[in-house]
Length: 187
Image (cartoon, rainbow, N blue to C red; front, side, top):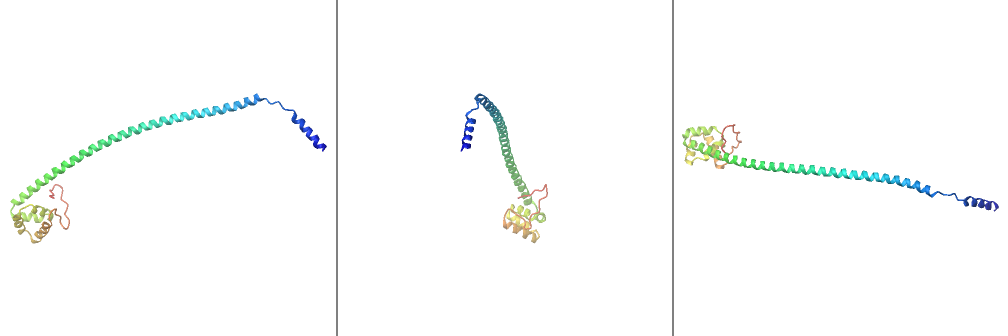
């Protein structure tokens, strides 16, 4: 027990003497650490602000470029639409002219065949594709058709008669041969 008492007494003396603590020194050390951390935070905040500013500037620049491209695209689309309308008008006009030309040509061909001698007309019509012959004959008077067909080979007359019975538009059963360039295909 004496040993314990002696130990406690020594321990008491060891802790009784307080070491003087310099608070100012601790505060100054802590103050330096805090100021360094504040500098780091301030640098990071400034970097963030610079990044935000550059991002906003890049965003605005990209928006301006996009708006310009969109305006250019819209202008191009308007030009394309205008050209499409012009092309459609030209196509309609050309189709009308083509129809008139076909009608005029058909009328002239029909007039020519109606004035031809029956034998000559029969010979010419026999040598052309059956659908074209049927188209020409269809426009003639019934009396003229009968006199021309009377002069034709019976087989050819039979084929043309079959086509005439079906009515326009005429197409050969075997399929029409393509019309050579420069010739008039009356349809």
